[in-house]
Length: 158
Image (cartoon, rainbow, N blue to C red; front, side, top):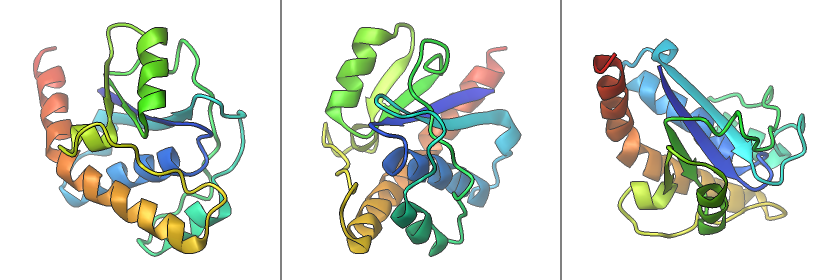
């Protein structure tokens, strides 16, 4: 099983959208999601918060329901993933200091755009959330095949 965790600040906007979008894209590619553990975390999250209203609403446009999402704060156990994918450089820097033996990449870096943050839409308009959702979707479509290859290497290596 390949464990993939998305990390942002509060785990109510960007990382829950990224988590759901990766599952959506992998399913569209015919992947069996039982071969993955895909989840999201926040470095400053309050455990148990729901996804933000606008995040829930913009995801509905893709027919993805994230209304049951509950935030999780980063802790030593839940950052034990095969790959940690961050929304920003500050998240990556935090994780580099606080974890070992885990590949840590920014989403846009993994997608080939360089060390560029995914803008935080928190407190912004509905359209800010649409823009961020689309930015995340674009990047995840670019990394999905890389995630599938990582899973094949991990399962093949067992």
